Amino acid sequence: MRPIVLLCLLLAVSCASTATPTVVGAFGERPVIELPSRPEPTTPTVSVLSEGTGPRTRRGEVVLTEVEIRRWDGAKPYLTTYDTNQPTTVVLDGRHVSPAWERALLDRPVGSRVMLVTPARLGYGPHGVPGHADGDETLVLVFDILAGYPPDARLVGRRLPDLPRTLRSGVLIDGSGPTVAPGDRVVVRYVGARWPSRKVFDRGGPSAVVLKEGAVPPGWVEELTGRRVGSRVAITAPPVAKAGLTTGGMPVPGGSRLVYVVDLIDTV
Image (cartoon, rainbow, N blue to C red; front, side, top):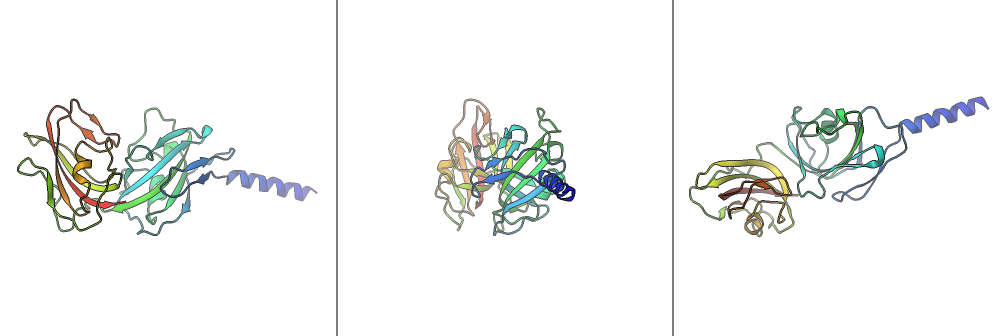
């Protein structure tokens, strides 16, 4: 009987050491994460939960992804992009994110859902180590990979967006892609400036935003709705009382007239 008992013990230890969280939900939906009993892993582990059919992400690309992060201890929420209207932008250049994030996101087909379980000190994302974080705790991260672009992605054959010479709203370049509607998740490059000083306060992209009031600066929903992917659009926004951020994290300065030039690169 001793060999059987020993085998059972070995199986129990093996199963405990390979226990992984269960993730429920379809790609693009906020995942429901169920955690097993301890022990938690001591090294980063990556699991492909579902594989997409899009092009594979490449080193050097800017990858746009939704991410849900939970603490192993009590499955407590840590961070999510699913309700912020702002997917995370990850640069896979070996400098901006941890090797654990790169292992999870590099060479994955767009449309994939990938899980990373890692000690926090090895698994911080593009914004570094939060001041309130405990590096010894274990984090569970679920990524939905939306798209990947070269860092200089732009309208085909065009220079990066620049400010118009005169204050105006409307289409500067017509596109021929799909028509954009409110609520769409659009990939943009943009520049924003105060007027009439033309002082640039923000320049970004490629990044994804949800075309929804409060998630993008004033004037974007009205001016971008009905435009086609591949368009360059000038947006004159009304002054706002005070500076702040949209719910998508985009800066909006206060007290002056604003102008944006936005390139609609894609929808995801």
